[in-house]
Length: 440
Image 1 (tube, rainbow, N blue to C red):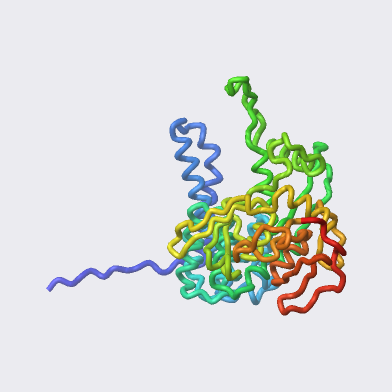
Image 2: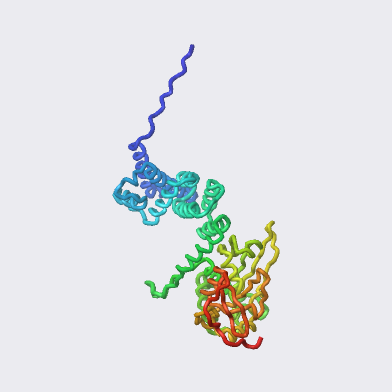
């Protein structure tokens, strides 16, 4: 009887073997630049792609090491119990300092993968399918949702987010997806509350000179505000080639997209102070297309999305619908467009002029904002068949306009002025903005 040969398996790789392999790979890479002189030109593109693949594999290996250290408790019991600090210190001691951003992304991945339902994220980052930089954002989004909503299948959601990020979805699209999930599966007010927190953080820094002498400012805007600003800039930053009398282009617009956007901001400032009928965009608000279901629009639940990729809460969509040039694409249950609203639902120029005379500014009690800073608000929203009539309109500054929509405040218009009350019917303030209405 023939005896089967005994196959001796090699022992598992220990610390020394893994470290030696990494050191050997590093030495091989260090020698690459000196070998390029002998490479055929036709091979350089393939080498560039392979070098990128090697870099991705190195990132995955680093992430795997950090996750292993986290799962074993090595990081928690060290002098630097936070993954970010542990990574920074370990790399510094090894003579290869890591950037703070890279350490922070590894920190986010380690925190998320230490929690439940994150196996898909761990697999994607350790096999190199998901770069560490993208994985950091995915981890933050997944952890926020895990703490905020009751999603029916977390493993499936993790896979969806990973697939989006791995296919090249921008950070903006991933955050929009987060808002969409929050709007659909969170409580009725969660998305509003999140955007309200973001709205409180809005700011626009003063201009400061950079090294070249150019002036730089930094805006930080919530999604609804950014939607209006971006739509306005896009409306005024289209290429403007020189044309002859027959309409033929005789000189192309050579400005870069960035230069056109910068010119659009300057033009917006000019239009705000000197509106002219003969200037395109003058006297008209930026156009924003918002898509949401009819049920969500009427009930004030769920979320809405703009054509530019922002996700808005119903209150934000209603606020914009009053006086921004919003085009509401209202969908039925099957996703078909039931109604594509038109900008004619907005306050007309004649009505706006009459509102300026009648209301003389923001009608919310105690506010002194002038008419030019105000929106025309539908007291009974057009989504619930409120007419665009003077008796259903009132001027509100953007701050109070947002507040009114978020808290369900309403008003009545009579010969003594505009009187505001809370959703429970209690009055707000005791003196209306005007004593007598102008002729309607």
